[in-house]
Length: 61
Image 1: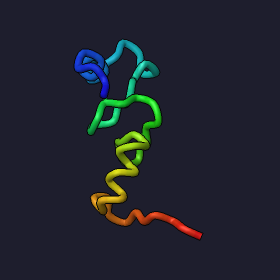
Image 2 (image 1 turned 135 degrees about the vertical axis):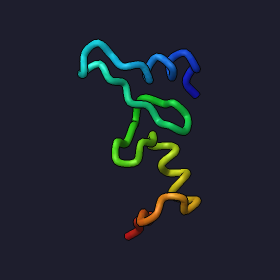
Image 3 (image 1 turned 90 degrees about the vertical axis):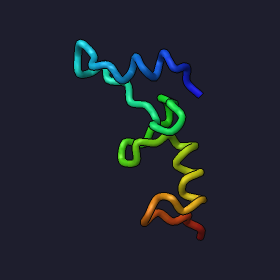
Image 4 (image 1 turned 180 degrees about the vertical axis):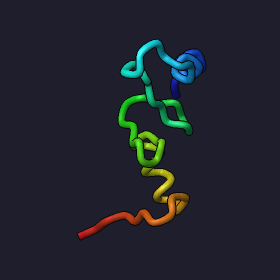
């Protein structure tokens, strides 16, 4: 879980566009972020297992 100060800091508009820090909306984690879902890899996996993300299935072969 990210500190609240870091989450609030990342919400502010940066001086330069390249300084945008994207964070998971669920837990605030910045690394392992998936842009398509706005989630980190851990929350993405949890949401998929619970069936909260439509159209995503767990693969097995």
